[in-house]
Image (tube, rainbow, N blue to C red):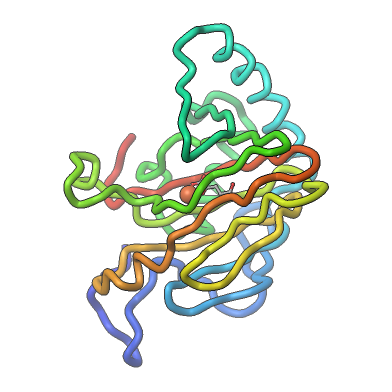
Length: 218
Ligand SMILES: O=C(O)CCC(=O)C(=O)O
Ligand SMILES: [Fe+2]
């Protein structure tokens, strides 16, 4: 894995290592559509096929509905969307996607939390937050180091992934993704990955998020 402290050309070493405007994974060619260097933030195209997006929504729909039957559904001010996690290897399609995602993120899938599916309906949002845990929390011992947010549908209006410290936002587009990492020795760079999901103003928004940890979790 990348050494977080190593400096090359005055820039810190990154985890993501693909260069150029496209690269090959085992089963798919990924497009690098846009790139910000520090903190490293990429907009990626052709990450998931339309069929894979539809299938992920179909598979998780039931689980989100099921979770609503219970009365313990957490009400969270900062995230109004509903969510579920896959356990990993639950479905063939998941194994395929996880392998691809591991290749894209350049981290073994054993470091990956189960894929998270988020569904936002009109008016729902995810306020600005960090994906990594604060140094004070127990979870920070094996902290998250990188994120891939994959868009599973085209949103009619709103729902951008926004980065307030970078004055940058990404509009959801089915099959595309936004990648960023926050394993820098320079904490200022990590803090610049503050981000959120802007309110969906028309339609629905579905995303699949993969978080990678510093050490293995499975
Ligand atoms: O919905 C988005 O655009 C962002 C999702 C996100 O920040 C997350 O899953 O951690
Ligand atoms: Fe996030």
